Amino acid sequence: MGADILRGAVVAFDLDGTLVDTAPDLIGTLNVLLGDEGLPPLPLDEARPFIGRGARWLIERGFEAAGQHLHPARVQPLFDRFIAHYLDHIADESRPFPGCEAALDALRAAGAKLCVCTNKRTDLSVALLETLGLASRFEAVIGADAAPAIKPDPRHLQAAVDAVGGDMARAIMVGDAFTDAGAARAAKAGLILVSFGYTEVPAADLAPDILIHSFDELPDACVRLLGACGAQAGRL
Image (cartoon, rainbow, N blue to C red; front, side, top):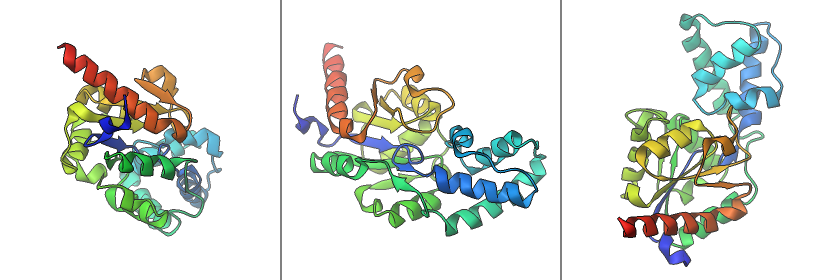
């Protein structure tokens, strides 16, 4: 099965923990808030799994882990402070995972349509991608605010696929956590998970179609998965 199978297919990517290692700047911003409240900072490894459901979830889980349960009325002011600080430090230490750019370029060269499907806000996602020089590789960026519901709701993935004129029958979700797995399964898309992302449940336990440990594996994994999907469709 050759790479021609990628032509016209959609590959949708999660952002934090999949395309970009954003934990240092996200947890750094969380720790600024915790420090302002007189709470101890969280170690990076402890807080990494809290990333993936958006900033509000990160703040709520982070404060709980630091020993303080937040009253709902406190979340919005903390969120506003989080966003203001994070925008100023969005790529201080955040970097694409090794091999990311080369894999994206290979998929695009083979004719795949690339988009981002993330629970991060769209403006923050675009700002991060532009700062890191990744934005031009994607035809659409669909953040939490640009979809009718967020992952794991399949409507988020559907919105991303629709935005690039794709067909869910030839779409793959590439992610790192249960939100990505849930959206892909509910939408009946292919699912590739990375083993190096941010997840409270190990990626291998989320039963992806293919688990990869490096972006070097991604183009071939997409070819194999689309070929398998095509073979299944042919037997129906």
